[in-house]
Image 1 (cartoon, rainbow, N blue to C red):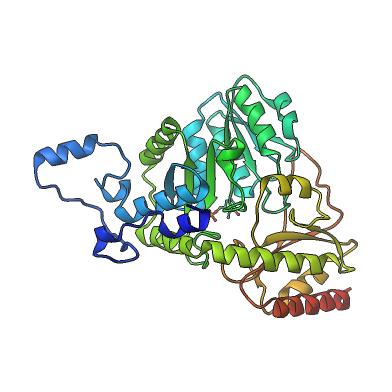
Image 2: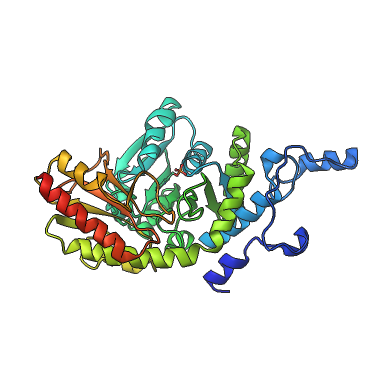
Length: 388
Ligand SMILES: *Cc1c(COP(=O)(O)O)cnc(C)c1O
């Protein structure tokens, strides 16, 4: 079965739901048992796929977990209430006082905040590393390093990491590899590249319509999955039924949306790279980009999210004039929906000084007609010039 066929059929059991193509949104807390004996067996059951209590999963969340695991090439998934919850729940499950974690300097900023506050408060130390470090990560591994955390490409600055090289060094030292694979959904096969736990912010392309918060923790190994599942269960923060259902529905059209948004995004990125106002386009699929060779080796596609470095000198007022006046590019965080978005990118760095000449603007290309988007961008450059 090829990838796109799997996306359509994974997690669907029409016979169990009166032939409906999609399972309903199961809304449940209590699950009634017929006998005391049944009630007792239930509480001893494995937490997976057994409906015992709403917080521990419903037929809707089990269907979503099965489908998202298959999408990533994994065996198990845990649905979480947001992408950030997938990150924090995983790190809390795998680390304890006295442990050390290596985190890419290009990471999503709330993940950095979690390490610097919550993990630090628990006596877990974090070292940030250059996202392009590759096999050099070995030099940063300490005897107490338990996790090496990646995000490739970084969702603000788009460095592609040499995941197989980093994973080989981590595994040689007995550390687990956790990767935020939100950008690489469908185009990067995490488990074939040495990742142990793949994290997805399903709020982005999986949901795809900017109307639900959802995340997923995906694994292949039995024990690793159970370890995270048990810790996750102890916190009691299950995602809502409606959100899980929206994620499952979004998965069915994911491949078509991604193909189109990746292709359109690449053409818009090429157009931007020809503009005199632009110093560099941060998009690994562009042949001129720094990490293009790694992207070609490890990815078979991408998505509609990329960055643009504007040529300095440039004033904040001029950037605001350009961004404020867009008709189709909404000024807002998140990405992966059907609509185009833009934000000025502020990346905190502690391991490497930012190698960019000027300010970074991050674009997300939606499903609008490309001509309209390019006209919108062109008018924006005119406002930038006028504001000087
Ligand atoms: C948005 C995002 C997250 C967090 O997802 P939420 O669902 O918003 O919590 C995590 N990682 C990356 C790369 C993201 O872009």
